[in-house]
Image (cartoon, rainbow, N blue to C red; front, side):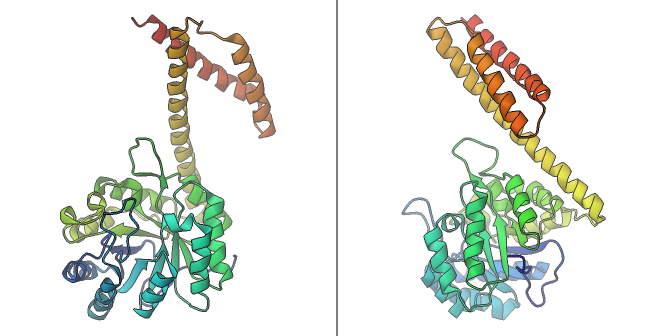
Length: 355
């Protein structure tokens, strides 16, 4: 896929960041047009709006459906903006193309289904339209790349991706975990592909849009897709993660896009990757200590001693062997494991001393 080309639209300056903005859902003709006109006045060139909305449970607002496509036509006619919407079925593709939608994107749930991806790819054969693919719901890079390959094999060349984060069942600061190392690895494998950050879906709350947008820019993303609604508090879907056009303008004006040399930019990106990995390590260590405390409770309830020497020796031996196979020194791994073991023992001892 080395001949994939960056997403390009006539009249849209190929300058970072390329902004795609608009409401999560097209809810009414008036809401759609009001938001579009306000965004257009800011200089936004690509307008997004969900026509069909895949929801977790039935009964939720699932979009207005095909009736909303003429609204996007009006947006294009009245503002000159390009339009973008999500497609999840062959019928969606056909109706969106017939309505003149300029950019299509594929949602996380669809990306995760190879059968759906193949059907969509087949429907797009012979069509020269920019298409963006969101990461699958689970942190599976190969599944993401597989979806891109299906589109590429159908003859599409203007293929980009949207990093919207990965679903987690645990409580977390963000709605979806970013796992920044995954899109970074995708960029390493496909250096010419356009990457758009989706801070609305990663954060799940409007307060996170600005910092997540900045982080995406610091990592060299090409653009951002941000949910903006003329009255977000009354939105029929994802109200908490949408911002008004005025709020969006403030966010975009605060973003720093660093124009540095290749060496400096590369170093900054690598350092950011280290920071992200360190954050992941801290989260994993916290989870490991939580499990250690659960073990401590079990030992206390069953009158077992805290220190299990045989088990510790087993862990030490196996992990040092694993480290050696992965190019790390056994001395380094031993020192790490000793520190982890000491903290685990101390946490269990504190449990034993509780009344």
